[in-house]
Amino acid sequence: MDGLTLQLGEAGVLVVLAALSLALVHFLTRRGLLALQSWQQVDRARRQQLITLLYTLKWIANVLILIVSALMLLSVFGVNIAPLLASAGLTGLALGLGGQSLLRDLIGGVLVLVEDQYVIGDSIEIGNVSGQVERITLRVTYIRAANGDLYLVPNGEVRVVGNRTRDWSAVLVDLGVAYEEDLDQAIAVLEESAAAFAQHPEYGPQLLEPPQVLGVVGLGDWAVSVRVRAKVQPGQQWQVGREMRKFLLAACAREGLSLPYPRQEVWVRSTEWQTPEGAE
Image 1 (cartoon, rainbow, N blue to C red):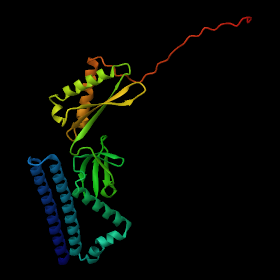
Image 2 (spheres, rainbow, N blue to C red; image 1 turned 60 degrees about the vertical axis):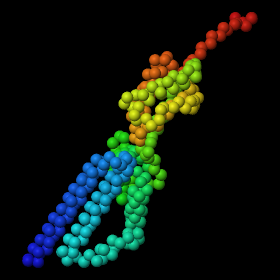
Image 3 (cartoon, rainbow, N blue to C red; image 1 turned 90 degrees about the vertical axis):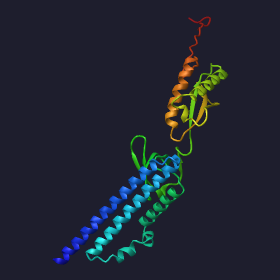
Image 4 (cartoon, rainbow, N blue to C red; image 1 turned 120 degrees about the vertical axis):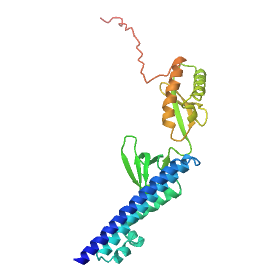
């Protein structure tokens, strides 16, 4: 009975120490996060990379604390943990299919962090999944789609990544101008409107370069497509794009520039029938 009581006491101490260790890791992570957010000497990309590394280190520390605590608890109750340690080696993991997959995911996670492919807060596209990165661990990347769905992508499956919020972004606006309009005049109106949008008090500072009218990019069934391009701060292309489309549309309406929509014209031709001679 005394031996069981001693074992329970040691187990209780281990559980308390594990809980305190997890709480300490959480506290240090919160302090580090607040320090990074107030650190104005580094740019946004570097700050987001450090935040991602901080969360990853927190995940690693939590996993190590839980594994070590579980092994020590088993040892307290007389379980020989030497075979468990031997079977938990990387060699044992690599022998099975699941172990190989896990090892590939862990290596992929390390490469994502070391190569700075994307960080928390980036808007990315991996295969058929696109959205904002909410969390990164060594094994999985958590991506929140625009409709609210949360996707978990194993880092070992990351082959081609499209990062929409790295360094700078671009806004592309294609406007359809009617064939009946004077194309040179339409381009002049768009150039004047684009220059005016660059002076917008709210969205102008988001532009890295003044918007440019690239010219005709397509001949459609009912309109000529003219493209306007703007280089903006990373992650601002959606908000700036919505406002720029609204701004250009209003400018075209003021200038009387026709922006057609899909339509179908029907031509009716009347034909007079003549009765052949001799026919009744």
